[in-house]
Length: 78
Image (cartoon, rainbow, N blue to C red):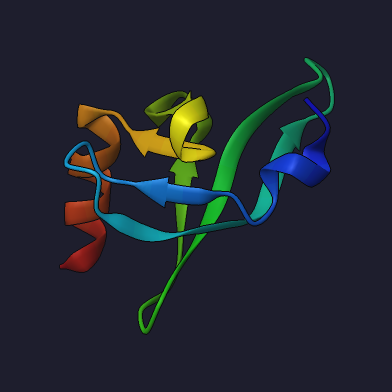
């Protein structure tokens, strides 16, 4: 998948609530894989989310946070 399809992709909670969009990717140059996504949260800035804490959902054309991803998001609210 081209990175241009990832930037701007919607990010949802497991309950289907839209929380933001992917604004930037951090790639591990040695491994050649995405390690983190910067998720822009409306009115709250940006949160750095491990790529492994999200999974792609075709029918929503975006990504859903895993249980761990939602935990990290909650920790970021504090």
